[in-house]
Length: 120
Image (tube, rainbow, N blue to C red; front, top):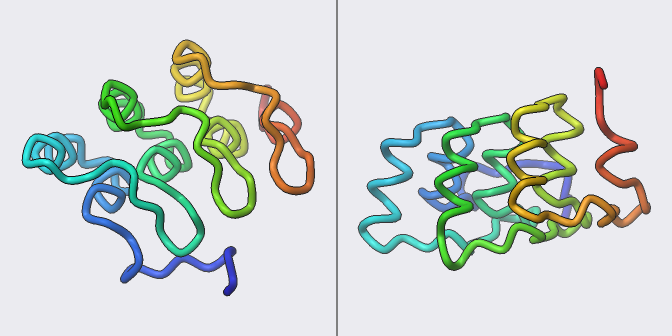
């Protein structure tokens, strides 16, 4: 399986809402019991999707969910912090750090979020 490709048909509705930054739909889905712990074909969960696009409101909402693990890793070993740093989303990085994410978790190639950060 190619973990670098994104397939629309493997993403949960919760992850799709997080990916596009639709916090109202995300909140509604969560309220109706939709799971925040479903991985797509790359091992990305909704928190990864929100962080990779810098959607602060979605990240914040997901962090408030009991089932969210801030240190989830994709199949390539990336955390939400890794994606936020890679994308240069400083507000998302700060939010995730306040949520006690481990900044020292590297991906499968041992690159850490701070090494991936842009425009620091």
